Length: 171
Image 1 (spheres, one colour):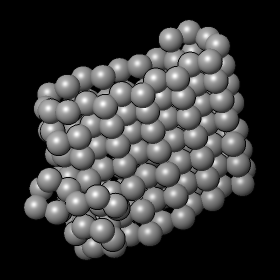
Image 2 (cartoon, rainbow, N blue to C red; image 1 turned 180 degrees about the horizontal axis):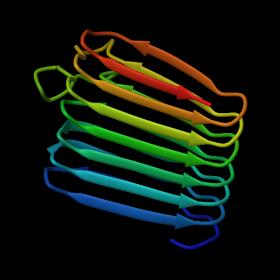
Image 3 (cartoon, helix red, strand yellow; image 1 turned 30 degrees about the vertical axis):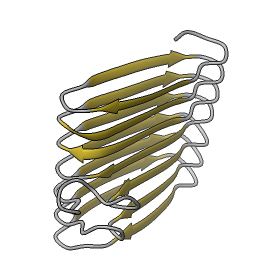
C-alpha cells in the first residue's frame, strides 16, 4: 500500500502461511492474527507517518517481523505457543513496543509457551519497551534481546518462568 489512509487487518488460520505487507506514508495501521497453525511467517514494513503494527501468533514455530521507520512508531507482537521468533525494529522518535509471550489465551501446545525468541531494537529518542513473559501459561527457555539507542530509554520487563535468557543494551 502506498500513501494516504492505509489500514490492513488479516486473520490467517492453518500452517505454512506467508503474509507480507509494506505500507508507505500517511496513516499506516496493520494487524495480523495467525491462529491454530505452525510454521507461519508474517512481516509488516511501515515507512513514515502514524505507524501502528500488531501481530498475534497462536501456534508453534512461526516467524514474525515488524519494521517501522519514522514518525509515530508503535508495535505489538504476541505469541502463545513454542519456538516462535518475534523481531521488531523501530527507527525514529516516540518508539513504543509491547511484546508478550504466554499472556492471555491458552496455547495449542499443551498450554506451554517455551523456547521463543524476541529480538527488539529501537533507534531514536523517547524509546519505550514493555515485555511480558508468562503468567497465563507456563513459559520457560525463552530468549529476549533488547537494544535501545537514543535518549530517554524506558524498559519494563515482567518475566515469569525459568531458564529464560535476557540481553539488554541501552546506549
